[in-house]
Length: 321
Image 1 (cartoon, one colour):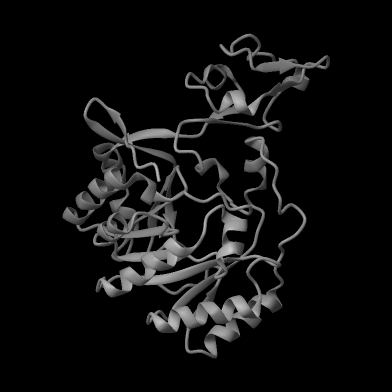
Image 2 (image 1 turned 180 degrees about the horizontal axis):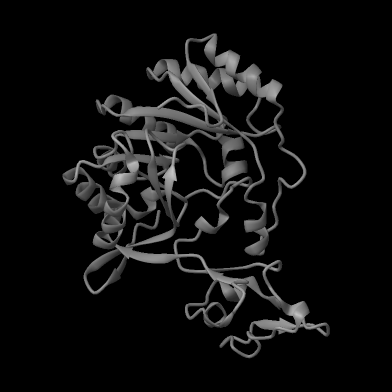
């Protein structure tokens, strides 16, 4: 895993693609969600594909572009000559070239936000200052949730931010796949109060088929976390996708793993396509455009399997905090 931190002089920088306040589904109370870029997995159903690359890059929205009204503000602005116009005046780009760009001239000149820079750099102090701004909106139980992408891709930066949060008595939560160096994973978790850890599929080959990596490290890290005596709250989470991980066999294997490790909470997320437009804006083909849908009945059936085995199972946003 690439753990290199972006630096300005000697100061570490984290790469973040969004910061959302007033979240109530990602940990106790009202929270501020910090979305990091960089992810060790490339899940075929991902809702945030803009988070995969740990670098600054752009997105392009056909719907925002005003070429039909005669706008050609981006003509000749690209230093790589990568914005091409057809006979009707509609622009197109080569994503292979765009992903290598570091100047983003198109973003700076587009008056319609059709070209958008995805990532912004933050220093530790800049990010903590933004979190402190939200103190009064959190209430007694709220705090910050680090998500992404996967925040573990920014180990050194995240660790410094977490230490600052600890000194300020900020409640911390993380949403992660736990696919990281085990020593670093356990060090980060020392400063985490609440965690969602994703478990995509119990079968290692199917896991790789859907995510690009095997699941051995994920389950090894969960076992290590349990053995470490960590005193935070852990809820496993599964994005539930028809034909991929919705089988009784997969649920039974996960139940067995949870019982073996003293884990008794899981959140089943119903498959959705809310990230479809992002795939389009990144020039990527979305494999799940016409399959993967889960019925409410099937979700409830899976929930009953966990409940029958004394495991608290929450569907969607129903996780109690």
